[in-house]
Image 1 (spheres, rainbow, N blue to C red):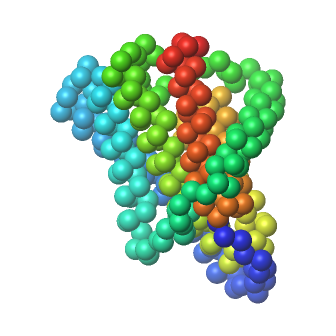
Image 2 (image 1 turned 90 degrees about the vertical axis):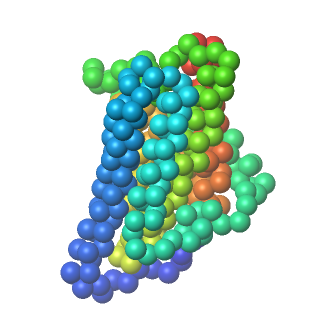
Length: 251
C-alpha cells in the first residue's frame, strides 16, 4: 500500500461519514460472502457430478480448491463495477530483494505474535490448541497425491488469498477510510478488520488466532513495501512448514 501523508478531511458531512463506514463493512461482507458462495456452489456441484468418494480424492480436492479461489477472485475483483489496477492490488512491478529479505523477518515476527496470542487464549477452556486444521486432504498422502496437495496448499492458496485479502480488500479499505480518518488510523483499522475476517473464515479458533497474527504482519509488509509479494512469500513459508509437519513428518 503506497503511503499517504495527507491527513483525512475533518469536515465531511455526517451522511458522507456514514456512507464510508457502510462501504467498509459491505467490503468485509462481500469478501466473506463470496468465499462462502464459491465453496458451496463449487463443492455441491462437484459432489453431485462425481459423488462423495470421488470428490474426496486428492486430485479432485485440488481442483475444487483452485476453482473456489478462481470464482472468489472473480466475484470479489470483477463483479464491482469500478476497475482496480495492479497497484491497488499490491501487484505493482515484480518481487524485489527487499520483498525477499523482509519475508524471514516477518515470519519470525508472526511466530512471536501468534505464540503470544495462543498463550493468552489457552486460558479459555473452549480453545483447543492441538486441534488439527481440516485442509481437505487426507493426512496420509504419498507420491503424486502429495505433490498435488503441495501445489494446492503451498502455492495456489497463498497467492489467491493474498490477492483477495491483503490485495483487494486491504487496498480498497485503506483508500476508503483515508477519506474519513488520518492515514495511521486508516491503516490500523484496516489491518484489524482484514485480519479478523481472515481469522474468522478459517472456522477454527486455534487456526483463526494463528492466521490473524500472520495477517497483521502481512498487512504491515504491504505498508512497508507497497506490494503483497513479501506477504505471499511469508504465506508460502508458513504453509510449507505446516505441510512438512503434517504430510512429511506426520506431526
